Image 1 (cartoon, helix red, strand yellow):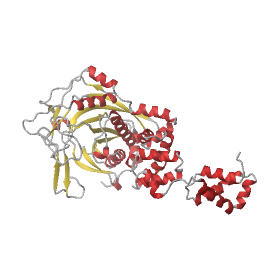
Image 2 (image 1 turned 90 degrees about the vertical axis):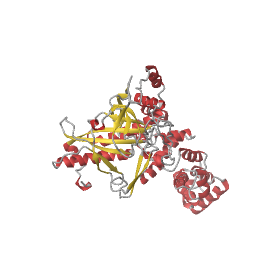
Image 3 (image 1 turned 30 degrees about the vertical axis):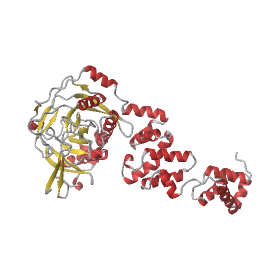
Image 4 (image 1 turned 90 degrees about the horizontal axis):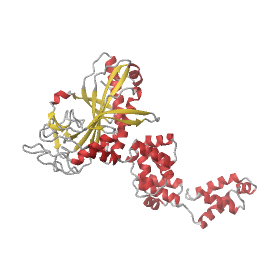
Length: 503
C-alpha cells in the first residue's frame, strides 16, 4: 500500500478508535554486560568485547550483573511499580544471526517490576496516565550490518556483517498496558510518554537513553477497533523506532494504514514493521510470533532474584528528584507561568536552560537565548535543541559578554550564529568577526557629533522638548558603528551634547 492510498487521519478517527501498546528497550549504562564481565564501552573494534558466555559457547555459565538488577528496581520504583519479592530469568528461544546463543536470556511471566503507571503531560498541559504492565530484565542482541541492496535491510542484501560486542548488554524492557481513550491524540500521547520516560531514565542515572545511539528504542504496537466497540483489533508492531518525532509519526501512519485496510474490507496482518525516517512510512517485516512460539522456559543456569525488602526501600528512599517534580520546582524558581513552562518543555529546553544557569548565566537570560534565537535556529534546521552545535557553556559565555557590556543583543545573535557555523568559541567568534561593542568615549563621541551635525533639524526638535525624536539620532549612530555601540549609552551622550535632560 502506498502513501497515496492511506485514509486521511480525520477520516480514520471518524470510524475507528486506536489502541496502542508501547514497548521501550533501555540499554543500561553498566560497565560490564548483563551475564558476563565483558566491557560495554561503545566504539571498540567489532567482536573485540566478547567471551564464551556472551557468545553462547558450550560450557560457559552466566552470572547476573548486580548493578543491572539495582537499575531495574530503580526504574520500577520510579514508574510506581510493585517490585517482585521473587522472580527469575527465562530463555526466549528463536533463531536470528545476531543472537549467538539462539535464545535470549529474558524474563517472561515473572518480571522484576509490574503494575505501575507514568503520568505524562501533553502540549496543552493535559495530563494523561499511561499504565505500565511490566518492566523486565534481559540482554541485548548483537548488531547486523547488511551489505548491498537499496534499503540497508536484510532483504536484497548480498551479505551481512555481525558484531557481537552489543550481545549481552543489559536491557530493561518497559511494556505498557493497552493505552485506550487517547483518540485523535494517540500519536501525541505516544511521543509524550517516550519523552517523559527518557527524562525519568536520565534522572535515575541508569542510562544516557540516547535514542540516536540506540540506547533507547521503542516498539509501537497499534490496532484499531470500530468506534463504540470494546474488542481489540489485530495489531501491528513497528520495531525499533529511535526518535520522539518518529514515534509520533509511526503511530499516526499506522492509524491511517490500518483504517485504509479495514475500510476497504481487508484484514490486518499481525506482523512486525519497519519505520522509514525519510518519508514517515512503515513497511512489512515478518509475521509476528505469539509468546508460545518462543517456547519460553526457566533459565536453568541462573538462580532466582529475590531482592530483600529492606534493600528495595533503601533504593526507594535514594531515588533522585523525578522529572515532573523537578519541572514544578524550576517553574517556581524561574517565576514563570504554567503556560511558559509548558512552552519550555515542548521545546525540549529544560535541561539546556538548567545547564546554562549552572555555567553561570541567570535563568532569564538562559531562557531568552534557548527559547528565542536557538529555538528558531533548531526549527529552521528541523533538529532538536540538543542537536545544535552549541553548548550551554557557550550560551552562558554569550550571556556574560552581554551582561559585561561587551556585546549587545544584536551582536550576541551574530556570535551565536558564528558558534553554530563552527567558527569557534564565543570569544573566538567575537575576535574573528570584530564584534565587540564600541564603548570608547572618544569614538562614540565622534559618531554622536557626526549624527547631530548630519541631522540638524532633528537635533533642534530634541532641544525644543521632543525628546522622543532622539531615537532617530541613536539609529544613525548605531548604523555608523555597524550596530556595535551601546544604544543606551549613545542616547545619554546625545542628550548630554544637546543639553537636554530626559524626564
